Amino acid sequence: MNFNLAGNEVVLLTEKALWMPSQKTLIIADLHLGKIEHFRAAGIAVPSQANMHTLQKLGVLVAKYQPEKVVFLGDLFHSVRNQSYEDFLSYLGDAVHIEFILVMGNHDIMSIAAYQTLGLTVVDEYLLGNLWLTHEPQTAHKPGMYNLAGHIHPGIRLKGKGKQGLTLPCFYFHEFYGVLPAFGYFTGKAILKMDKKSTIFAIADDLIIHIPTS
Image 1 (cartoon, rainbow, N blue to C red):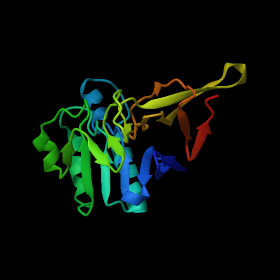
Image 2: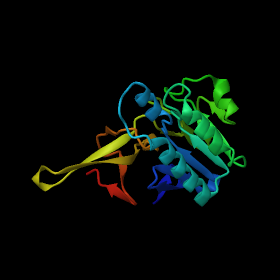
Image 3: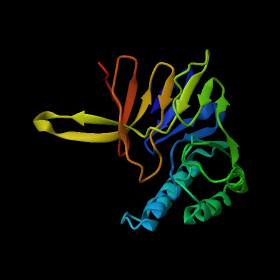
């Protein structure tokens, strides 16, 4: 779905990412690679396919849009180094023509050198035109800039007749900041409240649906 974000024409993708054609840039939040291994190592039975699902989805987007740049808005990995690191390293070997930038998140706890070994440019924040890219949404407003972040894993609860309900991931845009849905397969969702200043797009399989806030 095409959307004007602070004067920038962007495309909201059902794959839970944002494409910025003018910059030839994919913006993606919260992959949480290795989360499955982290839980399974603790003896918690969770599905094992999440990492490959996430990397395959990333590969499909890269093949489709041919970006020059991919910006990860933090929490690329969930925790310490495990097999997911080697899987991602293998993936990057086929994408040497792309600049990968990691905006550090609270789960990105490996050494800076470990991320740089992957060929990532590591930063605390990143400016892309008038977009101020961070991991966590910023409460302080920078004049002339629009903050785009991740971290929250936004979702919206839709209610119907008969007390039916459905929780969907969503893109959440407020007056001075926006939050991307979590890209990772096994990440959960935090329910966000709507107000008159928010614009919300829910993701339902292969559809993006504008949710009225009035």
